[in-house]
Amino acid sequence: MNRTVRTAVVTGGGHGIGRALCRRLQRDGAAVVVVDIDGAAAEAVAAEIGGVARATDVADEVAVLALVDEVERDIGPIDLFISNAGVAFGDGESGAVSREGGLNPSDDRWEACWQINVMAHVYAARALVPRMLERGGGSFINIASAAGLLSQIGDAAYSATKHAAVAFAESLAIDYGERGIRVSVVCPQAVATRMIGIEDDSDSMEGGFGGNDVDGIMSADEVAEIIVDESQGGRFLILTHPQVATYFQRKATDHDRWIRGMQRFREKLLA
Ligand SMILES: NC(=O)c1ccc[n+]([C@@H]2O[C@H](COP(=O)([O-])OP(=O)(O)OC[C@H]3O[C@@H](n4cnc5c(N)ncnc54)[C@H](O)[C@@H]3O)[C@@H](O)[C@H]2O)c1
Image (cartoon, rainbow, N blue to C red; front, side):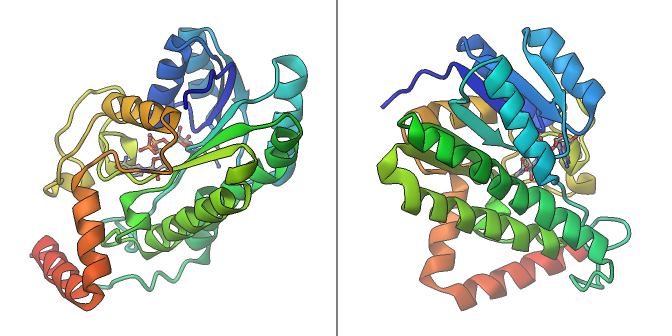
């Protein structure tokens, strides 16, 4: 099942999970293109691993198309595209779980989540699927979240767009899987990165989500290893945190009971 990756693109590669994925792919011998809206962070990672940096906003389809054109012209056909860049803002002004709930009045945050967490995956596929089909195959790894199967309490826009990201990956696998396009969707729970409030490069596993208890937090390196190994093995749904499989099964078995359990958990977080 293993496929050799010669050229890989990792979006959001400047920090966190994306950076760990870049490091792992470089160790495997791939030419890695580190893509980030934070150009300086992309440069730093590329310099460390001997890769190539590209400052690109993945929410801009024209820029994603130009990126794919440029990489294929200057480096080689892209075997693996990892859509990892993502954003989360939280429902409340503070970004933490709040009494007010998910009716965030700001469309800007919803729009940014939609563009970066979902449409960026669509733009990558539009740019690459025709090329990959022509050369007989290629792989996508789309980083969603456990929130895309379950829910992120305190962030309705994140939860809704990560569900959409999972649904898009399913469509991609269903439509193109038998024509050589391999798709994996990744649904991690907490990972120690800036996204959950842990300082970049601190190696700390403490204090995520504003100091709330974090269920089974993992490091970006651990998660990157699982993602690359399981996608190489051909798995579609990659659950880096095994407890997510149990929660997902419970939700599927009795959705109403699951909602009641989540309501109690929310109360506990607010207490
Ligand atoms: N950390 C977690 O607990 C966790 C859990 C589940 C899923 N995820 C998902 O993992 C992915 C990586 O997140 P992370 O935890 O490493 O966070 P992070 O904030 O450390 O990294 C996200 C990276 O994406 C980049 N980025 C943001 N917007 C961009 C844009 N428009 N164009 C290009 N790059 C952009 C950022 O500059 C940053 O380098 C995200 O999709 C996130 O939703 C994270």
